[in-house]
Image (cartoon, helix red, strand yellow):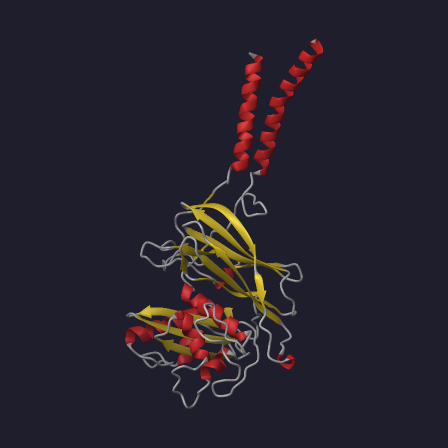
Length: 393
């Protein structure tokens, strides 16, 4: 009878230990993914909120900052446009400038103007009722020493920066290079973006601001593209890194949380590759460092997946983007709210109990030790019985 009890205990211990090893330890994400509801609470991680910026605005921010750190090249993710040639269009050359911080107040001013133009049928820097541009900006954003604005309509978000830099459809004789002047002005250190589809047509506004009290953030922009993918196709991740001490990142990762049936099943950390856009001549090399870090990954699971960027600075400081929560990307039609609008941000973070080096999740350490003790307790009597039998022989 004792042998049966010990054997049963031994089998139970083995079962528990095996279960702990193979378990993913799922972390449940709330069903509400903090989408586009205007009444949703706002968060302040990198100035993100549940509905600012939308995906298109974040893409333009990323493309804009890629251009600022390398004005001799106009990098484009899908290569649908040729590389921007240095000193073309009106013969004006620009030096590299620091990337722009995203600003929520400026974005509200930009969104208001884009919607106003589309809804009221005007296309101008003043509001459709004649309100001055800077009067409008002052209503949202104050304390600046300089400001500027670019507007456009009819362009897809992937074409916005490219079109403005190349001054497409710019008929101004007074400011024939005005869009590029705004984009490459070093006095600007913040930007707000408004990209909206109004009455079936895209309108976009870039509102720039300059404040002496503002320091450039380490990571000013991060994106995935294309916006949605299918199972078995690649998705690209990219972020703009900045260091005022002219030092590249010691390490750069994109952290991806794979969701299956609404459950965060595993976490993957991928090292990112650096693409530094060098300047045409050493004389124009800036005293700071900025580069794009990127990575591609083939997605195999359906769902609305989470991701965030992690950078380790030369000083050892760890920087996350966004600072709080996670960005989202969808497979197929995932990552949409009840109205069908895309959701790109959640306050949830990518948290799993423990993670293995290859991206798989290991067992919880406390349960591991309990199972090991249980296993040892079960094995010890069997060893003693075996020893007693041998002694009797």
